Image 1: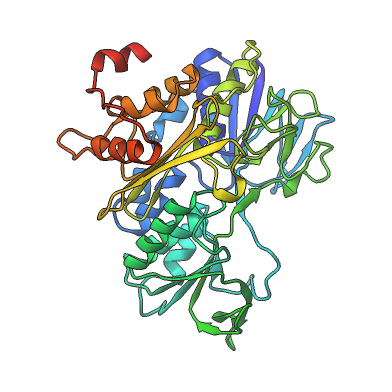
Image 2: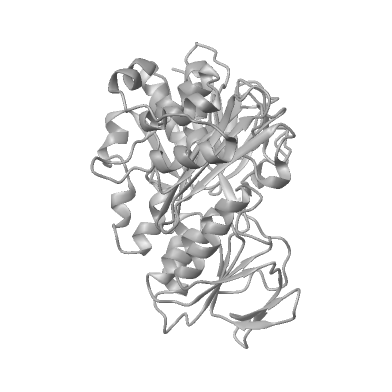
Length: 449
């Protein structure tokens, strides 16, 4: 019986295992050094915040794996021998494979800051990081102030977590506005305001110079590059992005770049070895996507795609239109297609931006200046129906159609306030139009699929 070995039990590896099992009777083994059972990484923050227990983050009952004949091994892989097709564990136990899937995810970036390995300095990615946070910041007596370095999604999650325990937080963001390498200016500015309203000490244009230890080798303060200011703290959260977790592959003969190099079929340069999820790097980026995509949705899609190939239906990875979702404190964010920040905007890209005068809600729609074709939509505080936006992008709908039919895309719960009339009014004013809003049509929505 063909043996499929998967290294990593995150969303990519587990999705591959589940779909291989649906399609075949192959022997499947998942190896993970992090936890025995798969859990939802995006839910880790809610364990610290007291909203759920860790076991609640596990989507499957413990008996699921045995029932589905998926063997689980908790162990650390030190080496891959592609010559004799085996995986070597830290305890020197060797596991043979017929096909190998590398799905080892990411690790937090460290950029060589002095003091970055002190006690009290940590990232937020793994279950072990969550356990360490409980030790480093159980309350505001042990942790009287935290400093977070890096202005991405993990950074704002960590800030929210710490604030639920009334721990003061200083947030160092190197850029002039929060996440302005991803978000257009109006959206980035709104998030700046929202962070400050949550009593987080947001420092823009602030770069970490060094982390200072106390006499016991624990962090006691950080020093800023620009001003030399020293900020006392008991915890430093390093959240300046992540990079593929691939160190153990250095001498394997598997081609590496930033991640494990793969083609469109998620194949490496070694026969019967594949890579998926955060650790995979496309030889050539797909459209506007990055070669490495550390995103939950893409990990899941890669797992589904590769399962087809493993089971004899060779399938190219085609992720379709870009989409993602996240949360900035209590503001939900969705993005579909491409809405670039000002410094990355294409020459022909036009943005329409609407922001609610009092609430933290806004929408930005990107379209082509000449063809008027929809390029992408960002929303904050307004939920959209994925299937509708995806179809508009497939159909290359123009901006006038999109604005007129915004009610079809709204996916907020019943009785929520809607804002389409305000949005269309501003669009008409900005662009000298007289578009009328179409009433929501379930017939139109469900014909889309």
